Length: 370
Image (cartoon, rainbow, N blue to C red; front, side, top):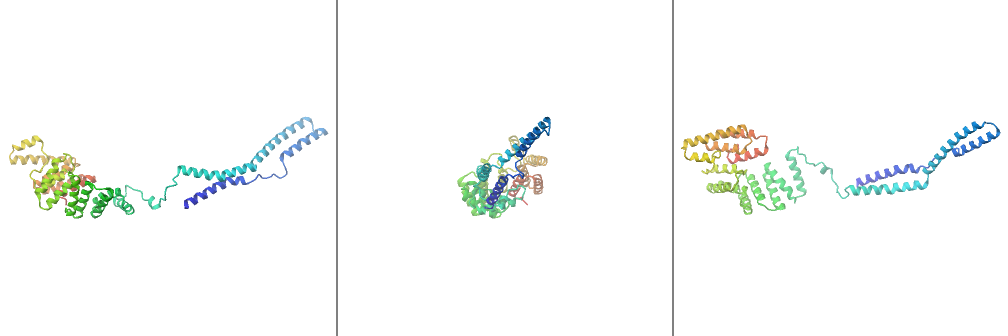
């Protein structure tokens, strides 16, 4: 309402600025018309010539000068008369009073946004700043969802961020709202189960297991659900069942599956003999290893581990390589070297948040996350 009042005042001021000069009539000059004076002077010259007071050449020069002034005076009075024309002033006033507001409203309706609602200052200042802390951005999303609790897309965005921040209870609530308002899916069910595991300190509870089973019912190959169901079996003391689940995952997985190192490490943890205990061997190396005795085979594996360690020192971006190296040291019973490799790995990927997260998750699965 205040905005419209300001607009009205501005319009009135503009109209007043136009009408003010029109409201002032032409000021009458004292002493009569200037053209009449020059006409009398011409008549007086004729009388002086007739009386012989001035010569003919002088009279002609005087007539030329007075005639020039008379023409200028007549032109000036014509302009002044046009300016003081009441009809012209009236037309200009009507145009200012009606035309200006109509033109302003037409322009606003064409180019403005008359249907746009109020935009409070608090909302205008709530712009996203990528440089502010993540917690501040989360608080803004949470404030939005308090006012719009059915915004499924907002819950989808918020839930994984809360889980990454370690706010597992809030993440569980966010995932449940995401399922309610955005629809059920295997991915959302397995994410909810993972948040329940995090809330329980890494234990696959019955509620979490139920969510993983719901995810499996929708997608039997969901990797997260399969992994945590295997972890549930391991925590229940059923290592063969856990190994069976994880072996099946690896059999179906592509070679570059990002979760493959995690599952391989889990197989090592449950003592699965077929799990890889060192960097993968080529077909030629595997054929040669079959004919070696135990000592030679161990020496070959040791050489591969050493070469892997050397390569990682030169290029430490390979998270999967670090996990293979740590796992190999642990299998060989060299925990001190495994811990040293863990420290080197974290230092190598410290500037990459995503690689650091993958590394820490893999180390946790190896039981070496301290």
